[in-house]
Length: 349
Image (cartoon, rainbow, N blue to C red; front, side, top):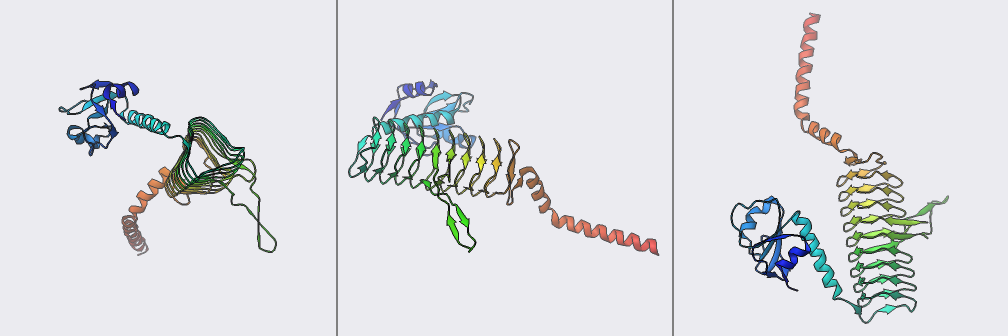
């Protein structure tokens, strides 16, 4: 697909400096782009590349002042990074529209139904009473269990497994290898020391505009629902346990784990490899640093914690600063002890 600068500027509400008729057919990084590609400049670290790039079109901020001439056509916008992301989204959507139909072999239960412009890849399984909305794409080797409902404009990548009764909203992306709706980790200790499995009869609800990375696992609820709320973004290799709730537009980085029945608020940021115990609440806007181990609720909005066990971020930074000075502090304490001992000795004598 080829697009002229004039059309691109219209899509992102930009103004053109240079050749409005010049066209591009792909994207590239500013330091590697070639003729016929579009790139963007939003980070001052890459300023030198702006003047040397071979890209045909560069998206830049309106506020940026050129220090010397550039060879590329510029499209000026309020926020170059956001505008570039918007273009990529539109480009991806156009590419997705070209993919439709049902590949063979695949299994579709007679009671399953799907909307217009759907793509169902080879070796996909659709169970009984599955409902799939318009423009949804399900890539090969995916499993969709009985009574699953999937909304419009959903992208399910290869090898995803979605267990029975799961509900998925609109504009959701689920990356390869993710498992949604497997049993929660619930076992009741018995008098003889054995563990009796607690049946997990709830489901998983994923609301609109959620993105889930590759090889993540989201367990079904014991009763009720495990819920990922609108706009949340989950990285690769994340574990979400039974009856957890993830709030609106919360972001969770790779290898984090959240134990059962924990409620995470809106706009929370959880760093990679962080671990949260079960049955706690995380207030809106909280920040949990990478590798933090959180064992209690964060009740104050905007809290920031780090470490394991996790504690207040600012206190942790101060403690680390003090710890670096411990050798010098020890030396000074010994000197003060020597002075005190000398004063005591002089007083006695």
